[in-house]
Image (tube, helix red, strand yellow):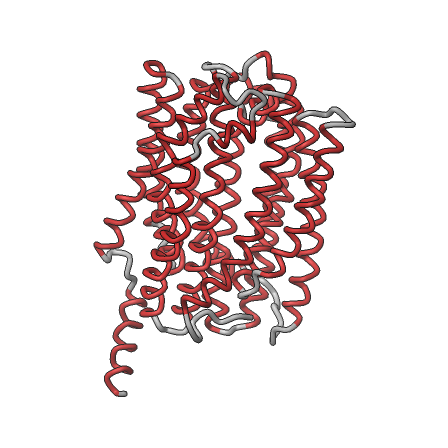
Amino acid sequence: MKDLTKGNISKNLWLLALPTMLSALLSYALSAIDQMMLGKIVGDVGLAAVGATSSYFNILWGIEGALVFAFGSRLAFLVGEGDGSAIKRAYKINMRMNMLFGFAISIFSILLWHPLFSFLNVPADVFEEAKRYYIIYAAAFMLFIIKGNMSTALVSFGNSVFSMRVGMVTGVCNVALNYVMIVPCEMGAAGAALATLIVSLGSCVAHGLKLRAEQNKLEGESGRVALTDYAPIFKMVIPTAIQQMMMYLLAFAVQPSINLLGKSAIAALAVGNSVFGVITIGYKHLSQGLSVLTGQALGHRQPSLSRKGLWITVRQILMLTVPLVLLLLAFPRSAAFLFLDDPYGETAMLSIYYVYLCIPFTILLALSSMFHNFFRGVLRPGFNIVGGLALGVARAVLTIALVPVIGVYGAFIGYSAGWTADFLVMLFIYLSKKWKTKEYKEAERAEREAMNEI
């Protein structure tokens, strides 16, 4: 296990984040290739089939994020304390929760497909393609949750290299399978979903074996799990789930109005979100590293290291995010050439406006993500609910108000306004210092007294 509080913190954060960033970058690049295959071979129908139900899957990813983030923060704290038995119990509890929720989500989503498609106003010309993709992707979601849980456990242990290696292997396999499914087998968007399901199963097996080996190195036995052992994890899961659900449920509520704009608008959003995914890779993993560092610092009763890590992460996020934003603004049509069969058509034009109206504001989203992870690390995830509510409400209100007037551009403005609102709220909460718990303040006093003695 890697203790991030020992040695050079900036270096430790980079060493933890870089493997996961490289893995995510490879995963994104290979996923982008999948999107290119759909756009170039299947056309706008393929991209729209994926994008038509994306708001619903974002809700599911929000649930997955709540489970993963909450568990990661709790586990990092226990790693800082060095209690092997507690770590094993926490992992056992979380695996049970993830498997239960994952199975329930997949079954519920498959049964829900017809009323969901009716509510979302899925266009008739992409209906069948979207249905096949949706059913397979929903079935795979249990694997996504389990894989995310195990990968986060390894990161909390300070090991991010293994997931990178697995990601490299499964990513290449995913592209190969996608080609087979989309081109020779002519399965379209459904083939892309099936390939993802297969490689996710393989990733789960690999991570499971690695985690078993890591836990065997810990001293102590997990013992019998009592109901009281669930409380600390639920204390983290519930606020995080509420925050994620508020954001994505409000986005889900406006999806029908976007789908009514037709497949060009849906496909343009799918392309724009793929471009947006490039930027999220760096800041998400740096922020996750901050959460691990913060949890370990509190476990060691060294809160000053958590604040130091925050400002180091600000610098690292800006170093990664700003150049990417400037590059995309300089070459906005690059996404259209990559993903679309007609880089000068209506869909391409809309995707360019996405770059201009949304991409600059991802810098604010990156910083607000950092604050969210910091508050999880100090075990105050409840404050994230306020930021999630601000993001969701701002986006929903502006989208609903503007889409009937200016079309899909209203959805673009909704994205940017939501990200801005989230950042401003999270910054205000941090500056107010209301997030400091009684235990945190006591640790600060003890740390100051120790320094004075020296």
